[in-house]
Amino acid sequence: MQVTILGNNSALPAFGRHPTAQAVSVGGETILLDCGEGTQIQMERYGIRWRKISHIFISHLHGDHYFGLPGLINSMSLLGRTIPLNLYAPAAIMDILNPILQVADTRLSYEFQFHPIEENAEAILVDTPTYQVKAFPVEHRIACHGFVITEKNNARKLLPDKCREYEVPTYFFERIKAGEDYERKDGLLVKSEWVTAAGIPPRRYAYCADTLCTDSFLHHIRSVDLLYHESTYLHEDVAKATMRYHTTARQAAELAARAEVGHLLLGHYSSKYKDTAAFQQEAAAYFSPVTASLEGTIYEV
Ligand SMILES: [Zn+2]
Image (cartoon, rainbow, N blue to C red; front, side, top):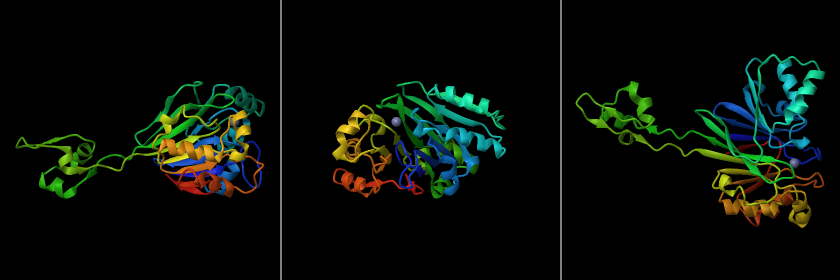
């Protein structure tokens, strides 16, 4: 699983940074997390393929997290998309998208499926054989959700020598890998664990967009391999951060330590900061490893 940062600034574009958007490639698909203004331009710049995107998730309805949607939806149609597009967002987003598409007389070339995210609820939004996306509430000025993406690559690994030794036929390989036992003609029950080894544990990525620093969702992000957490301000502005339901770099690092995550990725920088190195520096005193995200960079989960 890989995360490409398309936009990591808060409210305004500044110093070459864009409003929030990320592309996550998982299970052979690409999913978008938030879609700030300019997302389709950033996608083109960083080689994110439109056709691979079938699911878009919007954390909340502050404009810097979805003003790029009307353009993207329209462009996908102009490019002759035929596969369905699924949008997961707070219900009120359609009060904005529908009139825009109507006034522009947009006739989509593909099926557009909208799935409302219920306010303040946790829910499994997508569950495929290769990955799962779960939403959980965070604490912002308006209803806002974080997402946890789990890559399901935990199938057991086949041990060919053992399969030969126990005479497991090739047609049964997939089933025995999935945990089923095989009964031989002589009556011996070949246990799955005799001929397979444990697979790679599933990788997990958590995305916490705009939120106050809080432990209220700690159980959702505990032990994830990579945590993207907003750090709108440095800690000298902690009062402002709290008042505006945002987090400082130091707070994000302290939360990452309490949640025992594998790696912390910072972003959603206020446009008042030109240089983001100070975010990494501040956070590193409280948690390691930490990276101040850069647009266009691909982070391995
Ligand atoms: Zn916001």
